[in-house]
Amino acid sequence: MNEVLEEVRIRKIGVLSFAYVSAVASAILGLFIGVVLTVVSLTLPSSFELLGFSSYTLYSAAILPISSGIMGFISGLIGAFFYNLAAKVTKGIKIYS
Image (cartoon, rainbow, N blue to C red; front, side):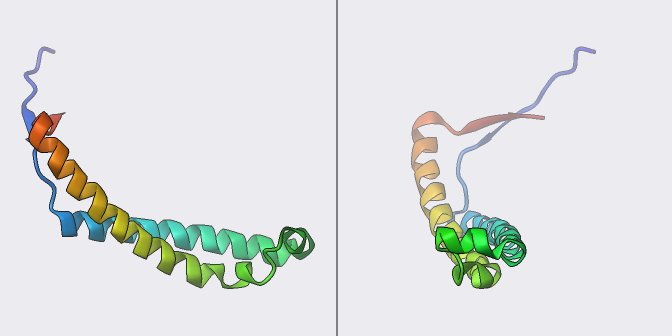
């Protein structure tokens, strides 16, 4: 029962590779949210027209994945860059396996 855990540290992240992963994950989430908004707007059109979403929700299944992917890429670039700066000071994140 007393197993020895090996410690590994993440000291640097590839900025572009992290940005690509972040972009894909954000685009998938944007697609999911866009489909949900489209389905809801088609089933309950009067409630969405009162909120001012009538024309946007019909295109949200196409618009949200693209815009979310772009924003995910940019935030991934920025996040990985700042992680690399912070990891120099803190020596990274400890992971035990």
